[in-house]
Image 1: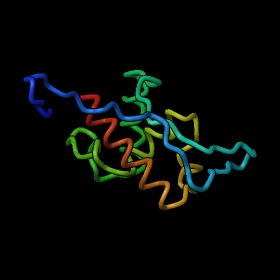
Image 2 (image 1 turned 45 degrees about the vertical axis):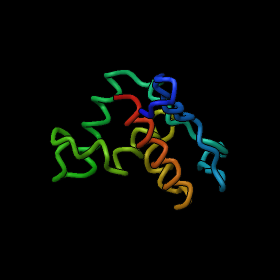
Image 3 (image 1 turned 30 degrees about the vertical axis):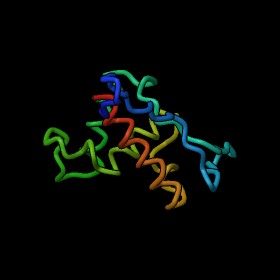
Length: 114
């Protein structure tokens, strides 16, 4: 936090949970996403536990209990897919530039949430 001249502490700006995509994500069922949400308020603790199990199954050798998975882009993609009601494999079609933008926003959103 940054202190201002009058002694008040300036809080960092909240991270916008919506990320506008440069290239819309088109799903096989015809649904098109022009933006994706990184809003963790849409998930429950049960969702997070399920995502940890899915992560461990998809990426063996990386233990979800070691803490590293929170910063892993693959885990973040699983979370983003769940938040937006998208199957993880469909999210993998996301353009690379948009993927970095969404993952970066998810990382900031996760950091702000702790």
